[in-house]
Amino acid sequence: MLPSMNAPLRPRLRILLRGIVTALLVPVLLFEEWGWGPLAALAAQLGRLPQWARLERKVSALPPWGALVVLVVPMAVLFPVKLMALYLFGEGHFTTGFALLIGAKIAGTAIVARLFQLTLPALMEIPVFATWYPRWKAWKDRVLSHVRQSAPWRAVRAFRVDMRRRWRALRQRAE
Image 1 (tube, one colour):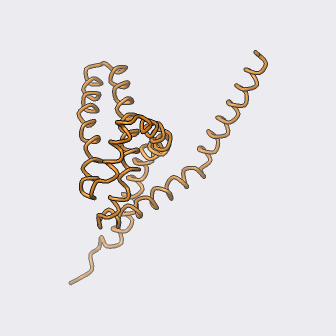
Image 2 (spheres, one colour):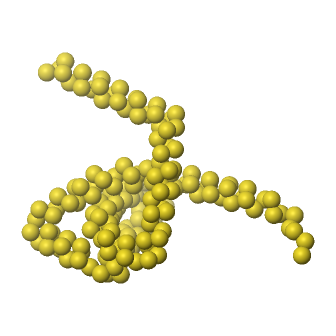
C-alpha cells in the first residue's frame, strides 16, 4: 500500500482543529473559572440551613453512579431554560433573553459547582471519570495559564487594579 499524499496534512489539521476548539472553549473556561469558586462558596452557605445540610450529607453519601446522576440533573433541567433564552433572542426580546441566559448560567454554575464539590470523591470511583478528569483539569489549567500570561489579560488586570485604586481614593476623598 502506498502512503497517502495527505498524510503530512493530518497532524497539521489536528493541530488546527485543536486550536479552534481551544479558542472556542476559552471564554467558557474563563467564565466557569471566574464563577466556580465564589458561586460554590455562596451555595455552600446554604449548608447552614438544617434541611439543606441534611440534603448535602445525603448527596455526599451517594454511590458513584448516583453522584453522576445528581450532577447531570441540574444541567439537564437548565438546558430548556437556555433554549427559551435563544427563542427570546429570535423573537427580538434581547434583554429578557440575555437576562434569562445569564441567570441560568449563574444559577447552573453555582449548583453544579457545589454538587461537584460534594460528589467528587464518589465520581473518582468511576474508572473512566478517574482517568479523564485529571487530564481535563491539567489541560484546562494549561490553557488558563497561557491566557493569564498573555499581554491582553495582563493589561486588563492592570486596568482593573488601577480602577479599584482610583475608586478607593475617590471614596476616601468623599468621606
